[in-house]
Amino acid sequence: MDLILPDLGLLFWTGIVFCLLLFLLAKFAWKPILNAVNAREQKIAEALELAVKTQVEMKALKAENDLILKEARAERDSILKEAKEAANHMIEEAKSKSKVEAQKIVESARLNINSEKAAAIAEIKTHVATLAVEIAEKVVRGELASDEKQKALAEKLAGDIQMN
Amino acid sequence: MQHLSKLSFLMRKIAVLLAFVGMSGFSFANEEKEFNVSEMIMHHIKDAHEWHLFGPEHGGTSIYLPVILVDNGLKTFSSKHFYRGKAVEVAGKELGTSIHYVKGVGPAAGYAMYHEEIYKLNAAGELHFDGEHPHNASPLDFSITKNVMSLLMGAFLVLIVMFSVAKFYRKNGAVAPKGIAKFFEPIIVMVRDDIAKANIDEHKYEKYVPYLLTIFFFIWFNNMLGLVPFLPGGANLTGNITVTLFLAVCTLLVTLFSGNKNYWGHIFWMPGVPVPMKFFMMPIEIIGIFTKPFALMIRLFANITAGHIIVLALISIIFVNKNVAWAGLSVPMALFISILEVLVAFLQGFLFAMLSALFIGAAVEEAHH
Figure 1 (cartoon, rainbow over the protein chains, first blue to last red):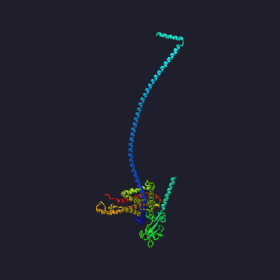
Figure 2: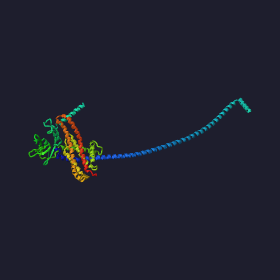
Figure 3: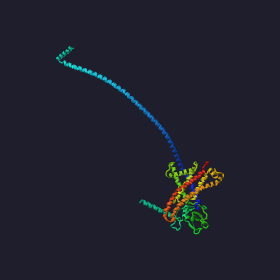
Figure 4: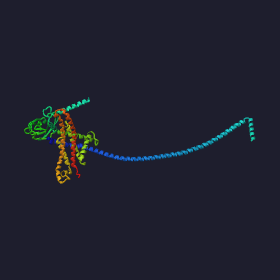
């Protein structure tokens, strides 16, 4: 029967110990623990919120970046195209210019060659003439080396003249 | 080879354990006296003025706890003066029965102890029995009994554990928990979220969290200590009706002092029912105020005491049959129940806190009609 009858002494001690325990734990354990846990939960919630926000921002930023990239690509393409065109143009120009120049050069070369040729021919002519005179002189000298020869020649020449 | 030595070590351990159990008071070999299971069990689940360690029940090795009596002033002495006092045997009312009690000696002179209750001796210097119970006056007994000792150790344990948890947060701030804090934080958060927040209004629950945490850990730790069969544990504290009564009264008081207009309105003048029903409901609701904590008190008391009784009864199989071979049956069964009791220890603490939160929640609930 005394198993289910409360005992005064134990009730007294239980009361004291439990109330003390409640006070000490509430003040020195539950308060710091719950504060820390709450602070951490708040921190985590904030971090999560920030992460979501950052994600949205990142998305926007990425879209913007893509746009910029696209624009940049287009610009690059256009610049490249322009450059190519300019280059082609320059090449064309250079080509035509060089053609004209080459023609000019060829022309002048031809002129040059012609004049040189003319000069050479003229020179050769004089040379040949000189040679002919020299040969003729030598021949004449040989013809006129002795009296008989001179006589023969004069006769011959006289003969020729007479024949004419 | 290693296995063999391990096995023999284990067997030696079991043998030592059995010898230890055999020594601890269930004296069936040495004495002619019949082994009385219910007496042994009752002795173990009730409070005592000594902490019996080992050896026979009378004259074994015990820690004698201080006796504190209020009887014309404060009287304190060791309970040794009872347990090593003068044994008295008187004839019982029925033929062939006898009643044993002890008279105190030394500073305990003038008092006698019968079934752990302390009485004053009458003018003739003895206890006067009428049937089973003495009719002598009792002094107020504020002794540090086995249960009080266990209570102090349990409370101390809760304090040490929770202070070291708190120390971690004080030192490290709001970071991920490590060590002991890592183990206890989920349980603390469980009490806060699943017990307090789930049952009490969201804007009011915070005030009650420290109470619910304290009651939960107090019950859980003491339940666990009760499962330890040797010194730091072994008392049946949370299976003692006085302790559960006190805890239930605490919840009752918290509920009553938290009760708002809506709560009292539901008790004395139930809204939404016809007037005659209101009169009919009033006494029922008033009784309801008390039956709820009463159920709390009985539930904890009965669950924990039942656990202790089952484990002791299963161990007793060996001593009833007077054969160690029965340990093959009784030890696995006792082990199974002990493991179940580990679950029950947690569950009962959880339930007590949960139902307390439910009652408080009902008391602070705002009208939602």
